[in-house]
Image (cartoon, rainbow, N blue to C red; front, side, top):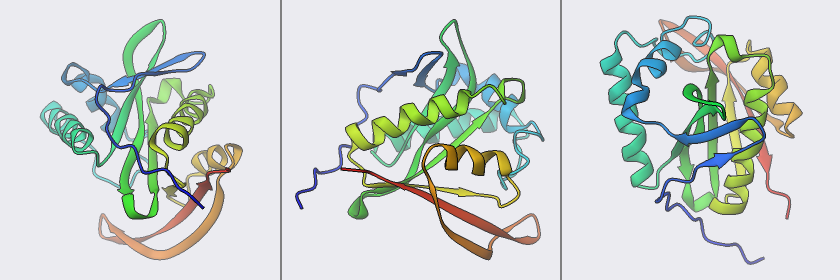
Length: 187
């Protein structure tokens, strides 16, 4: 079987659109909204990473996202509504396993925009990009087992449960479990 090589040149930045959304580059000017999202206890409930404490942390993370993109190690989009380009969420690929044509997807959305199908719409858009532009073979998602909404989103979009790891992640003084889902490119 002949496999295309991974296309990990994300320059110029690939702006993507769906019916309601524009997925664009996360900019330093987005730091305020990025910080609001990453410091919201409801948004961060199942992320299992510390909430941000300052806009400076948001700016540093945005710089890291850009550095990873320029190196071809990952790409993250800011989720915006077409009629208002203010950042309402993020979605992207990180931990790209180049030799195995695999990457991990992650996403988050401001609380007031949840429950409207926006993440599903964004996910479908970036999955198409990953399979048809990046040429990955499989995409994984690592979720907190208590995150029913994320699990349902993944299953709705064709992901299959691959694994359940017991106490494989140490955060906030506790060992936590992880569920791994994957989607394989259909050729």
